[in-house]
Length: 250
Picture 1 (cartoon, rainbow, N blue to C red):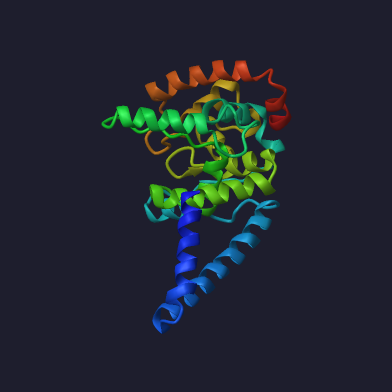
Picture 2: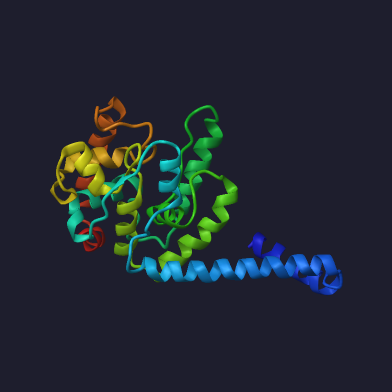
């Protein structure tokens, strides 16, 4: 709301006083053309994203440039199996079937925790939809500079894509280990099997790495991942009977 107000004031000021300035008019005109071009590109990319997984993401490019490699193997939604879908929902976003892209309660709790514990690792309140939008259209890091566009992209995919499509894209592009992207590549790397054949505990171990895939390890199994995976398996049991969850993961 505040951002929209600032934009409205800027537009009024420009048309009332500044558009007669040749330099300012040229800058505004160039900026608008760049913005419009980027918007058209995004819209086409968004439409393609409904059918295809992204050919490559900025995070994957960063992994290559950073020397972490790029191991991935996109698979269809049916070939992922229900366990990894349930594990990721239980771990990352238990209200995924019900919200419209944002979990305001989780965001408020994360902000409150981070304010009270400034020296500890910061918690996030991002939903699966937000993480999908960030991974496909944006980049890691960036703080508040990235958050504005992330809200726009999250709202857009929640409006135009189904929950199953959002989850499928996320499970194919999320980093699940250093340089390992997607559930199929993770399943092959850690357990030498296809994603659809993962057991609940195996799926939970992969999901436990998602908050920091470059830090947390499945092979060798770190103490954090082992403990976190057990908690995720318990949450999977609680969510297993939810018809909204079942409608997404089946």
